[in-house]
Length: 273
Image (cartoon, rainbow, N blue to C red):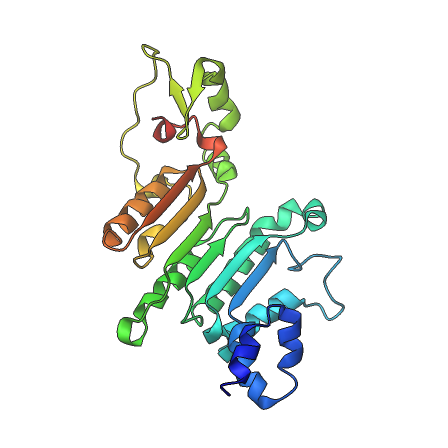
């Protein structure tokens, strides 16, 4: 065993690891934790895609997630989970009407798998549908393990695009606000558009109630204390309120915080410096 461990640790290609695991039970025990240490999903991937979906009516992505959700021991070996955009050719064939439904289904399946990933250290969600509240609740459950041994330390989340929800609520979209505040008379900063001195701006809005948010909640407020949090495409004040609760809980552990405002929200009052 002392000889085999260094050999296995020097094998980098996952295909080689997959072949090695079939050779002997000893290699199976050594390789499985490494082979399943990373769990990566490509979106839109195969979930409901007409060109990739198999004749059986199912697909590899759905079956794989379902296997993890029902208690597979493989989930315990995962320490890094990533959900990222798929290949460009698949994105060109996306069905916009099904994006929301497919995104909700994917969130439910991933949330079920996360609850089994008791050794998860890094979680990345970088797809246009955004992470629903069930994802955050699943991440929160990792802090309630026996012995409070939560290994989660790094979360990277791309927020949902709430433009459609704002339109359904009768609020002005990006184009309407864009016309009201001409970017030609602003200077761009890393936080947003900085108005010139003495420029007349509308008074800031009052406090926003949770019932008026267009994003799902709870989100960041239920996360356990982390070392690093990265949030991109923020277009609703509700996300920032949720992050404020998280920061208060993580003030003794947080080492790095990155927040990026969505371009579509750069003219909203909360994005102005």
